Image (cartoon, rainbow, N blue to C red; front, side, top):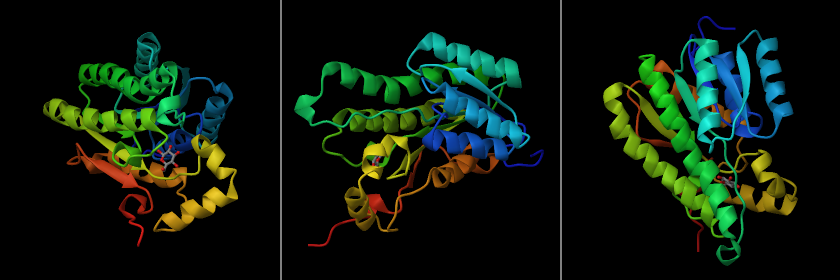
Amino acid sequence: MSGNGRLAGKAAIVTGSDSGIGRAIALRFAQEGAAVTVNYHRNAQGADEVKGLIEQAGGRAIVTQADVAATADVQRMIDGTVRAFGGLDILVNNAGVEIPKPFLDVPEDEWALVLATNLTGPFICMQAAVRAMLQGQRKGRIVNISSIHEDVPMPGNAPYCAAKGGLRMLMRTLCDELAPQGITINNIAPGAIATPINQRTLADPQKIATLNAYIPLGRLGTPEEVAAVAVFLASDEASYVTGSTYFVDGGMTRHALGL
Ligand code: BGC
């Protein structure tokens, strides 16, 4: 483990890294030499497991419980990271939730929850993280895990699409505001990835077959395939990349059904 990995010497926070895409990103970042704050909201066991795997491989990690939509929690997470690792270089806004429902059935509290986790959370985390990056004079990297649904409508998932669309414009706007400080910000837009957020689909072979037929590469993606792009965007190699969305979707977004 890696004095010479692609993220050697960097300190990173990955929100929602107790499972799914976040977990794969935390593990991969550590493999590449970053010290990682593994964040969870409710799944302490998952977060501890990720920390254990990182340490077994010779890496550095801490675990922090925080609701990304709660300012005090987030500040505690940032302060803890700076204290443990001497600064903050990379923030990955990964924590997310979706509650698919036809529009007319969406109760206001579910709308509020989905917006809080997927959009207000990244806002709060970025504000606190950027302050820490500036204080440490780091040329920080921000990577948001959005979704192809930052661009592509998904009927029956309006709050999620609204939040991810908002995350797209937040990223684009902050690109301009943060560039003078040398901080880059990009989104990754995963398509259908096999993770717990897709549990209901994964349990239904019929749905999987329909989905596979729809995706040009013919299969769901893996969390590791998303993590590979996150490593690039968080690394020094991505020094001239900011304000963009990287689609990791097996071509799903480009697919047009023939007549
Ligand atoms: C959603 C998944 C969905 C995928 C492709 C993701 O953002 O979380 O539920 O399968 O987009 O539509």
